[in-house]
Image 1 (cartoon, rainbow, N blue to C red):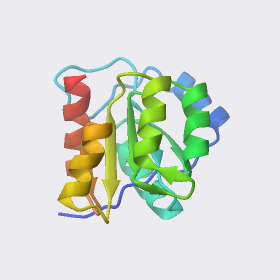
Image 2 (image 1 turned 45 degrees about the horizontal axis):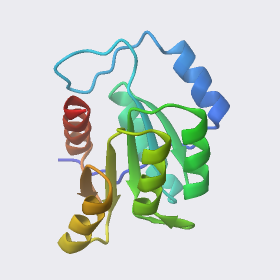
Image 3 (image 1 turned 60 degrees about the horizontal axis):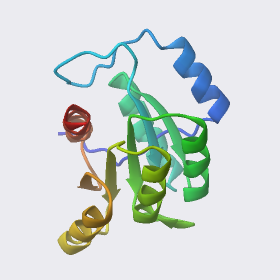
Image 4 (image 1 turned 60 degrees about the vertical axis):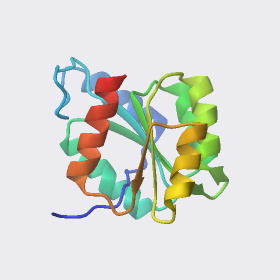
Length: 158
C-alpha cells in the first residue's frame, strides 16, 4: 500500500472561495453512504509545504475542495472567512499546537469534525489530545486509503 504524509496545497482564500463557487455541482467521491450535492470542504493545517501539497492532491482526487494553512494564525483567518466540513490538523505548528487550534476552531465552527495527525505522538499523547478536543488521531505517514476511510467515517457520524 502506498504511503502518504498528510498535506495540502496552499491556496489563497479568494482562490478557494472561487473554486467552491464553480465546483458546487461536483459530487464528493469519498465513500459515504449518501452522496452530497456539494463537495466536501476540508481545511488542512501543516507547517510542511510538501505535505500540504501531497495530501491536497489526494483529497482533490477524492472529490474534496481543500484550503490549507501553515500556521494557527492562517488557519483561524480561513475559518473566519469560509465554512468547512472537516479539519485536519498537525499537532506541532510554529505558532501553537493543533490542540489549541482545535479548541479555537470549535468556537468558530462548532461540530465540525477534527482529525489530528503527527509523527511524534505516543498513545498517551493521542488520548490526551482527544480528551480535550478532536475526533480522530492518525500517525504519519498515513495511507491515502486510510485517510479517506477516516474522513468518511467522521462525516457519516456527524
